[in-house]
Length: 190
Image (cartoon, rainbow, N blue to C red; front, side, top):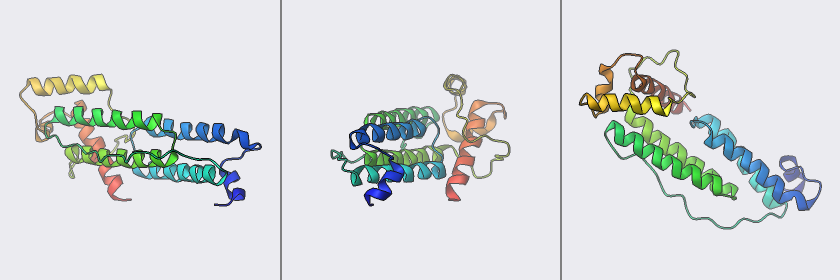
């Protein structure tokens, strides 16, 4: 990338402003990435923007420290409660690392791992035959409602995902199956 191209992504007037402008733009992108459930197409668009500002930063003389590889993270548990707990824990780890990173390339790698982690989580929930009409993909369930429904689910002796089908359409767990089934359909159509 040439310096002329770089200033289209990082429009600096003074080279002393480069670090601040890059950090501001990267922070804005990181806020976007951690603030919502990752929809692959949307995330990929943001990753292209991060790549552009990162390469622009380097073309204008900015330097990055190296970073450790982002370890592969997948949800390996099988019971509903363990899957939710594992996903929340690993997602939090990735989000914390993303927020502390000052390297655009590292942020890109973390975001990609967040998508892979989400895919492994969704695989546990999704059902191909679920009616997803009217489901809002971006609306995650309230954590308190989710854990309350999960507590009731476990108190009734249920632990696996197949048992969720026995509950009414209004149950948070049933709604989550529908939402994540829709996510999986959209993700596979990309």
